Image (cartoon, rainbow, N blue to C red; front, side, top):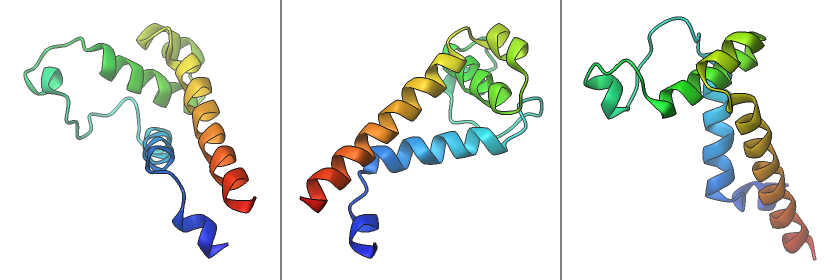
Length: 96
């Protein structure tokens, strides 16, 4: 098991960490951001809207999620599929 954990692809770790972060933050409250548009006080940023949409979906606010960004729920599915594919590919090639 230790051998497998050491070989988890960095991309998978980044996506897992991002999804966990979005699942645990409160989408209604302001939070730390690296977004240059948000930091310059622009009120609309497609990337921030997507992150907020994902966070809202994780909290069960699906209508608000679709209003924040229509692709938020789709992004969760795509990122989840990507993580599963990365892990599956890594562990199939490692175990053979």
